[in-house]
Image (cartoon, one colour):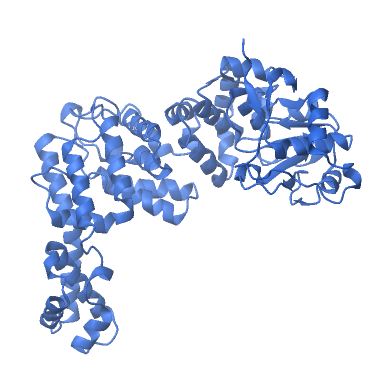
Length: 528
């Protein structure tokens, strides 16, 4: 049987060889070993060694050491981000974890096995090094002087575009696997190292990591590990929301986020991440839906993942109907969910803010949830309503909004993501994006208004601009300097209160036209 060829970049081989030449042991460890054995190109490379931090820095002068855990970042000069800095860490053991996330104390050791024993899962508790034959061969090709006396280690072929890497067979490696990680990898199992309860008691984020690895790799969680997660699920509440957010994002970015989300729910973890999503479990919908709200949201999100759409689309697809359980009225096939997009937008803002997402990201996803019910029947949608939708959502997010709607359709069980009428709507969006949709696209600005009317800077100028924009949204042909100037002269004599009333009506109209169309189709087809 032909063996899998494993490629280790020249930069990484040089680091391993430099450490062994200096008479320290050195191994690749953790996730990069798991990925190599799975035939996946690692996203980062981690080296563990018997060398102390000061030894590592002496061997690699172009490095930095800015943490309490012994990790030295070795700069290689590679342009590839995964190789630009390789982390080299002494073998270490850790004491108690008072905050359920970080060790209270780190002690360096010369035992690789003790270092591996502190890791989370067996598939991440393996180490590899080239056997002595290949280490010698690699050392000759690097041709470095004795490292302890060297002032600088020069990395050759740091440009990955021209690097000529060598491949190794698994038999070329010394594999250190004290906990059966390779067997679990072959069986597709996530199993905690040693006693599962101890591992989760040390670092509660591992509770989510188990589900995330299952989503990334398509693996199952071993029974005892799963039991321990359920028992200690509450520990996740002690973890910083930023860390929970990052794990949640990585799960949504995986190939099987539906698996990860189902596991979070099954294991009792989802209530510490986004409990609002659990409100949809078992909540039936109406005659246009064959799935519960929970199932629908998960299926929509999974479709977005399968299409490899951006994380914003995946998140919005997951949350687009989060408001349905709270908006539901009636029972059975004739139940309704009027206004669930408004309710869901508010809930989305709360969820994402609680998880410490950026204001920009939170506002963007909230907007996609709020407007995901846009109406797109070919013979009924007006250009002015589409312009208003573009104005509310923003031209840069219209593709994302359409993608969320496509995911919504597939999540409902329909066979086609983008029917003709949705393609026609996409055409209209592209066509109308050339029309004015914001005050900044009007042919006159505030200075023009002040010159025409003699007004001083103030609210009245802004009110006039908003009124003019509303009229241009109805008819883009009005967007000429002459017509807008003439209309400004007609409006200027009105009082500030009268202008404010017109401006509010314009804003209400911008939202109201779409709301009215959505409401009509809801009544007609008993949807949403």
